[in-house]
Image (tube, rainbow, N blue to C red):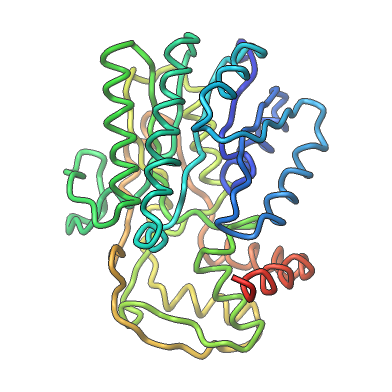
Length: 333
């Protein structure tokens, strides 16, 4: 067992919420940190928070990670054993229009995390990177040994910077840092800004969907339960090096149009599609080589999109009130 509480940043986010829920299920004490920003509908974040508060072993701190004093106070008030940093400003396209948010949320905040981990002798830091660091690399599937120094978006550049910052702190101060490159996480409780939710919502409201690169897109869609199994292995596996980076993907590159067809099937209606060119910052294909994660973490994704997409649509339909609130929120933006 962990000697102390597990701190999870981004606890009201999609992956952070699911990780907290799994850790609580396993009997750990968890401190969740989140600033509940309004990048997407905060009502969903409040719902996730309410779910976590059903456990007496969950403590929530609503702070901005750029507030170093508030962050230090958490560490001085609680015995923290492990830290999992999942807080970040997500979204490739959003980084084109709001670059300053990424500097604060993904760089300054991560530096603060590294500093409190360093000064509090935390056993291990696990942090979120992204498959976007691979950029337009033509070598498919992507391996962790590939060159990732040519990002195609500011978002990708900040996630690569996180990996380099962690490497520096491992080298200088002996911090054990484990970086996780997530590949297109999806599933129940997912984000409203992601394609799966947007497509389902568009079909629900009778609006056309934008299909980029004229549909010639492939993604390694990874179900949330599989993602969480990999994160937990990264937190608790005792046989890891001081500095590690792992791909967490499904090791299947799926056609976007096939994913859309599964959504249409579950929604019971065909979508009107507007074919558009590839967007700046986007990549045409992602595909994870997960050999390293299999060998070192025992990572073995189990859920295909044929099972995962129906699971999301079932959840989406069961939360119709939330779905309507998101539609209204989007209308006012």
